[in-house]
Image (cartoon, rainbow, N blue to C red):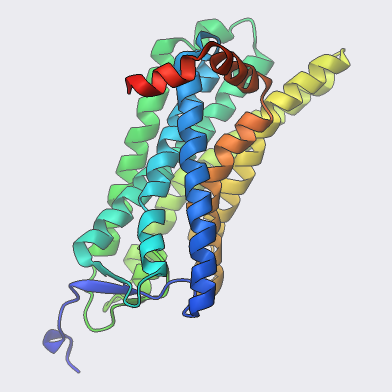
Length: 315
């Protein structure tokens, strides 16, 4: 059929993760549990940082930004996925799909930049502690944070523009559970080479470049820690950086598989997306909270003094 005679797509049908009713019900329960933990964990972490003055440091300032991005990142995807898991017809409008794609990329790309900045913050704190307070001032922290959000927005606009400027005619079935660029390109009715190239180069900027900075930062940190004379100093340094490094490996590893390896299978892409779009936003506050003495101390203090409940009621 001639392309000009085909009907332009006004909505997409998301095929989801499974068409088996029992599997969908199980996924609904799992996704609901994960989403609730994600919301509670990130909101609690943000509240503790705002309430406890001892957490008013650059590291927790960036962590607060990361939790904020996690909240909206997860909310943009999971609630709709929950509805679709209980629906027979999993439909999303073209405009709704475009909005979901844009927001997904904004918050996802911002997380990439934030994790990179957080590694630089840990590098300065461990490798150059004498000059750390002079370098990481609140003005610098604010500029870094603003730069992360601006870079996330710019990269997302490029990826979204190249993805949505393609014609979508005829096939509207997306083999995914949310609107993501690689899945959308599969159903485009034109040559996708330019879009794939643009997305790949944006991936280099927002994924591989930050990863390179992180590796350099942690390489320097490891060298510095090894040279420490006291065992307690080494343990404290590794404990401080271990949580951040774990988050970095989990997030970047799954994102690179999807965006930097275009030949991966559709099934593999969906499964990997579940991890960084659904699971990872839940893990961030859990990893930082369970492995961080400062956060656990702040939680005990605000509970004992009743500050957390007063703060929540004041919102």
